[in-house]
Amino acid sequence: MIRRLIAAAVLVATATIAAPAAAEEPRSPLLDSTLVRLEPGDSGPDVERMQRALTDAGFYHFEIDGVFGPGTETAVVALHKFLKIDRTSTFHALDWLRLSQLPDPGLPNRWNELDYIEVDIARQLLFLVRGGVVTQILPVSTGSGNTYWSVRNNRWAGSRTPRGDYTLDMHQYGWACDSVTGWCVYKYWGFTPFYGVHGYRSVPAYPASHGCVRVTLADADWLEPHLFLGMPIHVWDKPPYIPPPPGIGPAMVIPPE
Image (cartoon, rainbow, N blue to C red; front, side, top):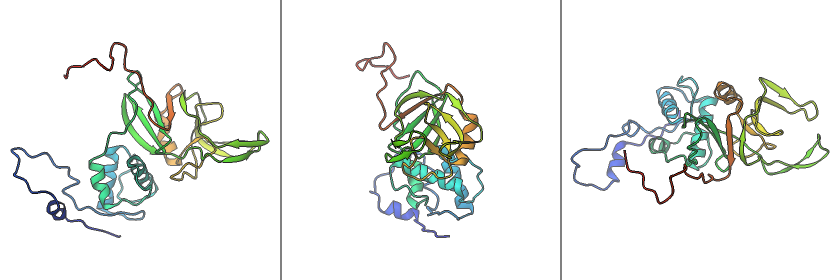
């Protein structure tokens, strides 16, 4: 296993020396640990520690087994997409620090909804929100933007994922195959007559679908009990502006609790 150890002393030595404060800020346990670079195929306590940290941050939802397998790879890619850095499956030493200082997810404030899905086309991520809280962040692959020959319509068509506000209005269990095109999708959740969220065998880190929102087969299994017909799904390139609740304008000051 490739390990690049960064001693905590290096972090201290490069910092500005200041007088000790009266009360120190609590330190993240990640900063007090050895920062290790991990790759697919690695195993052991460091991988288990990484899986726990990814679980706490909402990127990992599989068994914490200390094995850097496909589910862990998916979570690491999701983390890198979230941070807008290279979308690799290698967990870099600096990712420990990044995990301990995650920025705000940058989602619109949908004050009038509790359970819904946000699909961020730019970052290629699906955010599952339950009870008004982001509970899971999954990597997706949406429409490639290319044109292809549509066998069904006998014409050229564009591979574009529709943007806008929809609801999940159709669901298919297991595999479903189109008799005309031969394409097969897994656990399909439709939000328009032609597009939906579904599992697929190929989910690259970039837009590659014909317009649907692809997730891995394992993520499709995990999503199954967390979605429901009628659930809102919002698809956008950049977060839309949501007007504040009635009676709360931009000039109104809300006193702190």
